[in-house]
Image 1 (tube, rainbow, N blue to C red):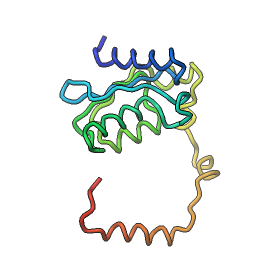
Image 2 (spheres, one colour; image 1 turned 180 degrees about the horizontal axis):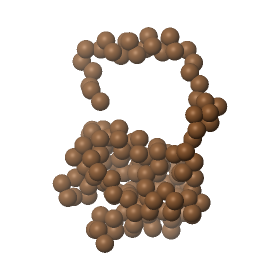
Image 3 (cartoon, rainbow, N blue to C red; image 1 turned 45 degrees about the vertical axis):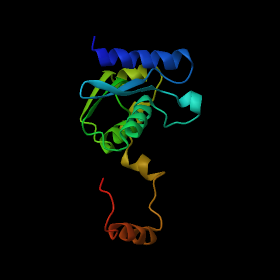
Image 4 (cartoon, rainbow, N blue to C red; image 1 turned 60 degrees about the horizontal axis):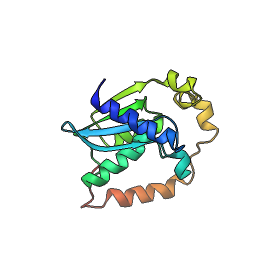
Length: 151
């Protein structure tokens, strides 16, 4: 068994045994060393964004004082949901290793697959453009900042 996945599994066990959330643990590694580890805390924190991957990214970013985790890899017990995958991409993590896949996750009662398979019509039923012209002015203001940090 991979040593980093073993740590992710122990994190997940910690979370489920303390009734903090689902069986999802994550470890972020840089240069072969653990940078952060975390588990799902959705139930504990009453926050739908407290997935293991999100928590680990927050901790790693804080530790490095940077959102850019481009030299890092993440090991996670479940295939990242769309939210976590988005955070992984935004943080520039270079490699993802996961244990159980989306079908496995669905079989224990989670609905990740629903989010991957949203139709255009389903999205349109709750995602609506509003006040675009005013928001474009905000974007223009941001675009014109000369010394902004790049993402």
